[in-house]
Length: 86
Image (cartoon, rainbow, N blue to C red; front, side):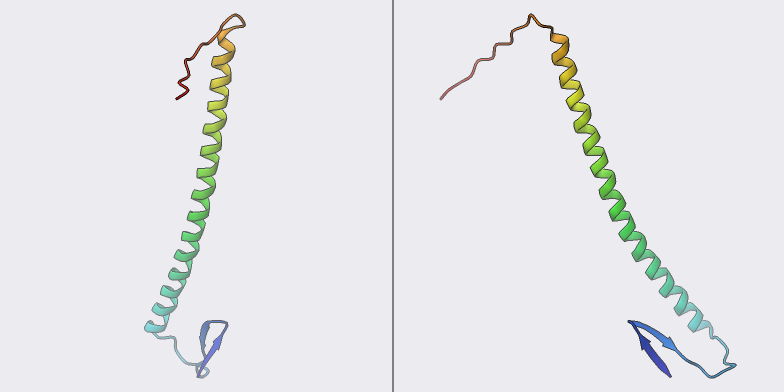
């Protein structure tokens, strides 16, 4: 007798029935498949958060670097740049 419950298959066997090696192997492989899927979802989410933190840190570091370089120029510095207005 087979009972399907929320996408999972549940097999009922007569009382005292032995668990076969095939059934044990099938259950183990199903558990591994579910775990690997969950692991891949976690890895994708984790890498997305890591990328976001790295990019935000890089931008903050560049902002600090540019502000520090401008501050080191001093108050009596003029920067002249030629602009081409074609």
